Length: 256
Image 1 (cartoon, rainbow, N blue to C red):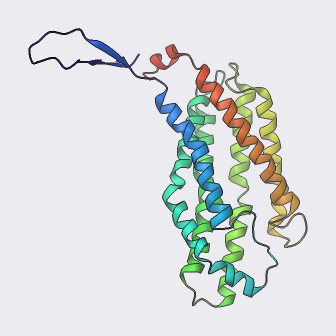
Image 2 (image 1 turned 45 degrees about the vertical axis):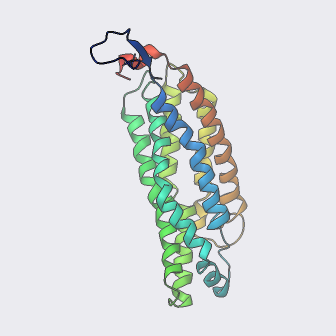
């Protein structure tokens, strides 16, 4: 177990009893864990209140409404805040992968695949659309036609970046089903499959601008968002239990 020695203010050369100071061996995991709710509070502030990217603006908005949205000062400030804080998401990915590596019956291939999928997903699903919106706001001299193009490109990327998230969910579900230690419960694997299905249901956002399959539609956006929120909450509950139940001896064995 990690520990250090505390010298209780003794004078030089004076012998005192050494008092061990024990450090919580899971401190780094808990720091990463609690970054998750902190990040999603910021996420809600940025995407819902400031940038108003969630819920998505309508794909049938008029050019005048699109230009007004792109020129909103709060949109640019929200994206500036996102650029400063998005790296927090990597801490969530890291702690999930640490717990996945505890699974028995599979190699490191699936944990690394999960980590890689989320690393890739952050570009089309978050960074790119926000940079596109910021560009439209930064250049008000762009014609309405260019602003409409940036608007469409941003929301299609944000809602339509389906493949990487599909692989993320698939890899995580397979890992849960193969795990002989049940680090995460099997029911979380089945819920993850449902989250995967919502990504597939959203495919029509690329071919329609109206109805339940548009990028702001009931099935393409709202269904997937509702299941994602439930999945993320239950994922955090299961992750908390996994960290809490991890034996200290296991950490010592791996040099924790």
